[in-house]
Amino acid sequence: MPLDHYVSQVHLRNFYSPATPGHMHAIRKSDLMSFPCNARSVCRIEEGNTNPFLMNDRAIEEFLFGVEPEYNASVTKLQDGKIDRECIHAIAGFVAYVTCCAPAATRIHTGPLRGTLESTAAILDKQGLIPPAPPSLGSKSLTELLSEGTVRFDIDQKYPQALGVDSILERVSVWGNSRWEILLNHVADCPFFTSDFPVVIEEASDRTINRIVPLTPNLAIRIVPDVGLSRAVPDLSFPKFTSRHQVLRRSEAIGINRLIVRCAENLIFYRDDYEWIGDFVAKNRHYRIEAVTERVPFGTGFTDTSTQRIVFRRPNV
Image (cartoon, rainbow, N blue to C red; front, side, top):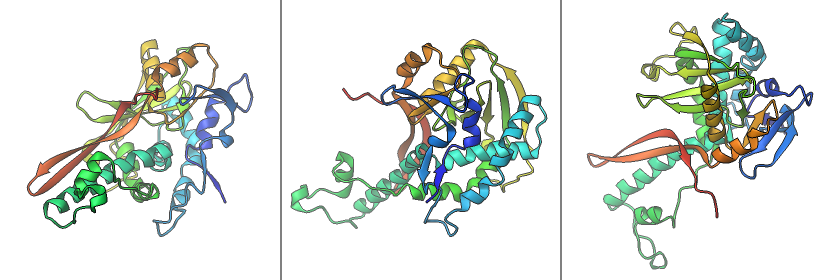
């Protein structure tokens, strides 16, 4: 059975350390254990890219044939300001792939589906279409049982993955037709990290969500999405793409690394083993991305709105 990498090896190899050839440094948020590793040994799941909900259960692998071989050349084009269609497609494709297939992505996208099921249960309860639970469960309604946690919907995480794969070209089109800020990090002692979910979210002033993606220790991009393209027909010639280069100040580089740690699912990867990294991760490890869903009454039913947020998770005492 194939061991599928949900963060591409070509991405992770850019974070190899000159001090440990063929390896990079890693630290876990869960227990702060640090260790050397290589790209092949992490961020992989057996049959991770096989999805039984799709007619072609390995469809995402075909998509990656047009992304991963172009990745390193595309990073160089971004650095040199020689951006072309192939560059945009490869980088936007990498971002889209991670946000479909990484375990963090499938976990996050499960939240809105669970919210839809719970809203549907509440509507059916209101209409008297679901009988109360047996006396052993207090003869409560399904809505009450869901609210108190006695019952919960169990969603196969391959299903949100399938929805993501099915719409991956739409994601590539939206992000590839948006504004990119190419972030150059010349702060010698604070290079960028990466992680097992290297697509950082950043809430903009207008409440939209930007994506920041570290590509090398010295290069990242901020994608400022054009929300007006969310329902447009995909255009992979990227006629609306714009970009600008920005050299970061120290505080900005530190801020991006803080977001990388907070948005990671568990593993942080880095090139240079500075003494400050352990404490830095420890201060930011009790966060992760969650889908925050709000149920708003509408007519005889509800409207669910869901957005991604970086949420503090109280550590177990």
